[in-house]
Length: 391
Image (cartoon, rainbow, N blue to C red; front, side, top):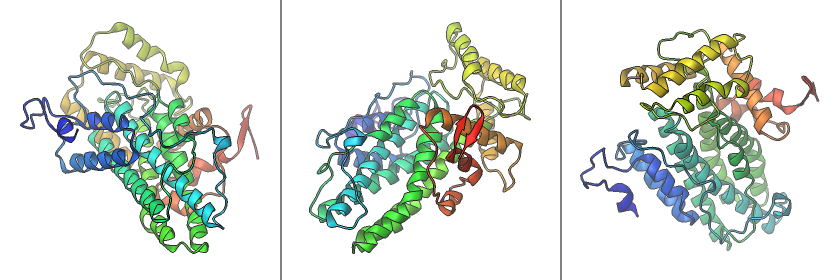
């Protein structure tokens, strides 16, 4: 399988025939065995980051859609969340095994989520190389987390699949399968940050139960890397909101680059129906009030739709767009109008795609290290009813 993934048609590394990172992602998503899934993910990320995989995706080929659900091992019995085993508080060996199994299960799903965002959104949204770099690293981390937790289960006389588990994480992935902004907000900001909130308590429970080895594994390996995963979600959510058009015709507004529909017209096509859908559909779905000037936002959508559909964007212009967008991702400490608009967009999207308010207490220190400031999440810890908030 590795040879098939690596080899191009000529066998000489020709970029016209070599497999892309998206091809690897699709292969990983189609791999059911969790150990093999993690191993392949580590291999793909390592080769991509070394430059051995030449292309993120092939723009000359229509993108292959990822599976609605990734392949999963039948050895892990999935049950509804209400029927999943109670984890307890780590006071007994049985409770600590249940906690460890739950963590391994979460990391295994995180592998699929990380490769899915690469395969599902990278090419249709024409994301820059740095996007693929970041999520390849995230996927590699998640695979390593799964591997060490699974190994720890075996050291303790158990194994991954010994207990039933639920797939609630993929439920939210399904709800956000059409929208990169929603996927980033829910999976890679809200869920990743929730992991940062609960990990210190989980570490304390293993330590109090006398399992210092697992506590150190979580504390020294997994916890610091999870901060970078949340940071990737925040970074690319901000990037999408701030990505500007090529000629800066509306540079004073927050650019909206089709955040919900990933099936964009291919560059160079003349599919008028797709172009019209692209121009018309976002009007009712985009977060409103991002900059107080909906006319400018609509102008931006029209310009981008036209350029994408007609193939007017040159490589040099695309590079300028990417450079401009990435620069705007790196804002200073002050919250300017653009940042405030990004935060308002985040609030609207989370309220639409995440069920219920966010649950405090929050790990403010870790969230801040990820660039996830309180203004992003604290207003979402209350319910909104008819324009008002309820504590």
